[in-house]
Length: 394
Image (cartoon, rainbow, N blue to C red; front, side):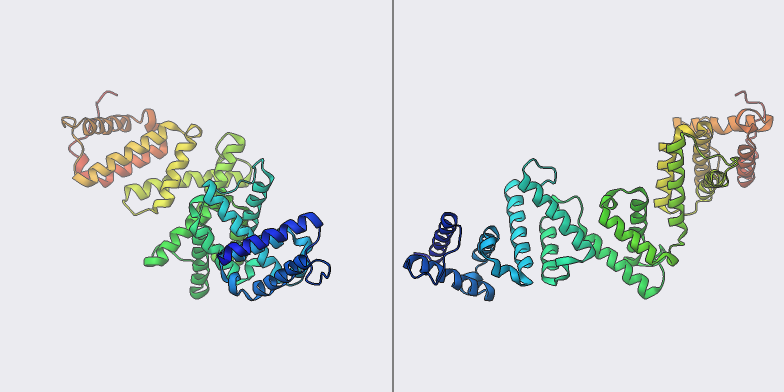
């Protein structure tokens, strides 16, 4: 008979004896020879287990033994008197989790009605926390590496890959320690990627989204920006933080902060919003390369909170940008007779602005708009000088 089968049968005999007698078989039993043999077998397995030799070198047998002594731990207290006990239990629990995922094709849920499944889910969360903080059993390199291997192999069952995040996090710290500064967009290759990653994490952190929904990741990032606070004077990071303040203000008070408020902080937020409009337009019309992440965040902000802003102004500035881009590209005004409907409409819009500009009517009563159009005309004076329409009816 196969040795493994013999071993399993012997283990079943031991289990049956313990269940029946509420004690483990003793190798010193003088009245029952079979019980004495079981006791000797138990002692042999203990020695083989501790040295991980013979059949205990077989991972299946090894894990089976861990499962056995864990279940009957009240009878095997000698295993639990040394520091290796928790390690053994940990490996056993990991195998149980793997088996569950392999069989059910999902991670055990922390809200399962089955208490055993719920405990497995909570155990995973605890391991993730210890892994992030590298504490408790995760101080053991073998266990740390084993968990790394596990979450890599089963990454499809988790919302994000924490291993990749920690690698990038450690890479960021290494960069700061080496260069005494945060990465920026002007550096090359991997460090530029690191800069983009940093911006995203800060955005996730400020808005408590994506991976920052994990309280331990969130706390780890809090600790990081606290430890390196002297480096966090980055304009873009400050910008993201300010935008978040504005969003929170609007969400709470259902209005945008006023630059005329008596409250200094609110007034500053209002002034900041106004400045962003000017910066946004200047960057666009001057064709400077504006950070795409900031650009997208601002566009999303305008779209999400459009009901709190002057819709006419937003529409006008959008059309203004389109007109500027066309003239800059073709060195001429769009034509009213163009076959392209879009260009024809753009041409009519420009002529309409000219009419309002010379009469200082409608939207041109807005000093900001009026001055922008004046600057626009001066910049493209050659294109405008033969196309001035003073009598076009709006």
